[in-house]
Amino acid sequence: MMDSLRLSVQHLASHGYLPSSLEYGFAFNAVLAGLIIGPVLGLLGTLVVVKRHAFFSEAVGHSALTGVAIGILLGEPYSGPYGALFGYCIMFGLGLNYLKNRTGLTADTLIGVFLSLSLALGASVLLILAGRINVHILENVLFGSILTVTHTDIIVLAVVALLVTAPVILFYNAFMLASFNPGLAAVRQVRVKTLDYLFILLVTIVTVASVKVIGAVLVGALLVIPAAAAKIISRSLTMFVTLSTVFALVATLSGIIVPMELALPVPSGAAIILSAGVIFLSAVLARALIPSLKGSQ
Image 1 (cartoon, helix red, strand yellow):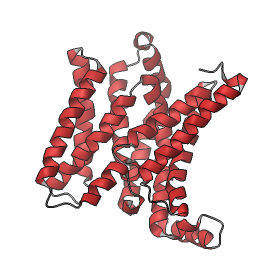
Image 2 (cartoon, helix red, strand yellow):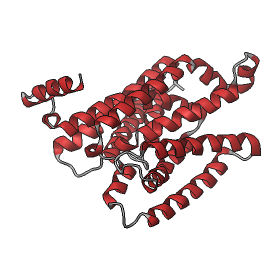
Image 3 (cartoon, one colour):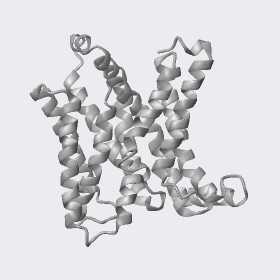
Image 4 (cartoon, rainbow, N blue to C red):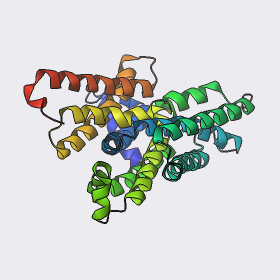
């Protein structure tokens, strides 16, 4: 099915109906990955913004570098050390949340501790691997690379998208209630702590799955920027969710396609985040110029 879709897209691109860069297989893989992961990041990003977990998503993204290093050290393939990547980052996220509930320390304090230790561990492992890995592999992990997106990556993204989207849609109202008023949520028999762990798990796996396209350094930003832009100009929860999803999709696709079409030597992750930044600034400008948007929350 994927091969048939690829051939159809390449045919349309060769006749000028789609961007010419889509004639290449790697470009098709990258755009397909963007179509899968962009809306998921936009949807989940609304919860990240409401729950004020922007710093957490950044920390998970940065910890992915350590997960990749551990995976390579354990003998996993350079192109996709998914076992260590997912395993390490999930332990990172759930362990951080567990200690937050047990120690009484604030989330930002624990994130600072965990992130520092994780980066120190990653740097140490990378020094051990210095003679075995190509520096370009690390660049791809840090900033994303459309050239490295494979069939396996697309399958992983599709599975993660399903695993994340289903519970978010199913428990979205409960997530929102627990975020705005945990006390009221508890009275209504919403399992606040269970939802908190579920949310941490969802953010972690979608962040890790997006590293190939967006990069470990920047992936957290795509969870935050489209949702922040949507929140500025939204007048209802439905509008907030819809705009965040659309903004994330537009930023992802434009960040992938525009550099290829213009032959710009810009990593895909950086281009995606710059596109999201343009959307955010446009939302700020729209709110300033359109009176009806100034009363929105």
